[in-house]
Amino acid sequence: MRLLLTTSQGIEDLARAEVENLLSELGVSFRVEERPLGVEGRVLAEVGEAFYTDEKGRRRELSVPTYLNERSRLLHRVIMEIASERFEGIGEDEPDLALRRIEEFVSGLPVERYVKVSESFAVRSFRKGEHRITSLDISKTVGKAIFERLSRFGTPKVNLDHPTVIFRAELVGGVFFLGIDTTGDSSLHKRPWRVYDHPAHLKASIANALIELAEPDGGSFIDPFCGSGTIPIELALRGYEGRIIGLEKFRKHLIGAKMNALSAGILERIEFILGDATRLNEYVGSVDFAVSNLPYGLKIGRKSAIPKLYMDFFGELAKVLEKRGVFITTEKRAIERAITENGFQIKHHRLIGHGGLMVHTYVIE
Ligand code: SAM
Image (cartoon, rainbow, N blue to C red; front, side, top):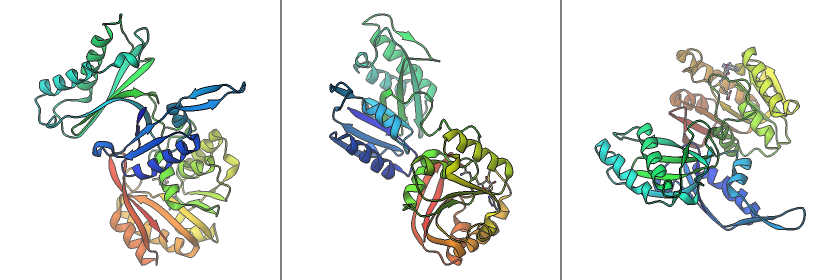
């Protein structure tokens, strides 16, 4: 089986490592590839059949997509691939031609192997890049081709709101992809524990990527701008046994973070502190790891205040940080200045796609 796994742009290597670990635990044969056909935010896994032994000692087949949906912390979707194809020049094609190419391709695919005619289906599509067609055009065209193909076997049922089977059609640049979306309509990064919605919350998949980059070893860990608590909550959910602290200046967000932690069932694992990160040393004498999604000044607050905020915060961090820090922000100039002027070294830098922006991520020591 070939699984197309989606995640955030810029963390494909970390998602790949996670998937390899999970599949190794299953003892199944596999091959994982980052950015198949050059498509960012995608990982392809070719996986052999997996089995488990039930309580009566019988060997049963294990669903690898279900296993990944339940265990992954970095993936957004697990899609069973039906077919992938490169459509050269589709970006410049007239809309009629582009849609005809997609329709002809889908019409030739054995979609009847993936959906019973008695089951309802819908097509969800995703499009990225320069094209003269919209994602709605793709949904309609692919839906029509699947409907006509299934009509050979009976009367197909379409249910756009609550389908039994979701086909996912993606057009990213010149690459077209069709699969069965085993994740459903809600992406895995939308965690069920989120009951308080911070206006600038971090995707849980990215929070886990930052945690991976920090490589916490059981030592104390702080998110000094914790907002709704995404980073400390995800760390606690991984079973981290060290001290976990979340600091936040605004009471409303801190209460929200506690509500989220309660809903996640790990409230007692996190020390939430109402306080100002530019006075960090007043709350913690020393901390091994600091990981945070810094205020950007885009959604909250004034952008002009950011350089001073970063300078004051990294000045305080220099007094308490023992091992490693990981920070994500759009404000490249301000953070690089604050990092270097406070005696830290940048060990790693990468760009991660978040909220339509490519955001700078730094590992510092
Ligand atoms: N990662 C968080 C989440 O997923 O909800 C969002 C963090 S948000 C980008 C930055 C947070 O920093 C905001 O909640 C803001 O209130 C807080 N903040 C701003 N200035 C602060 C300061 N001086 N000390 C502590 N927190 C501050």
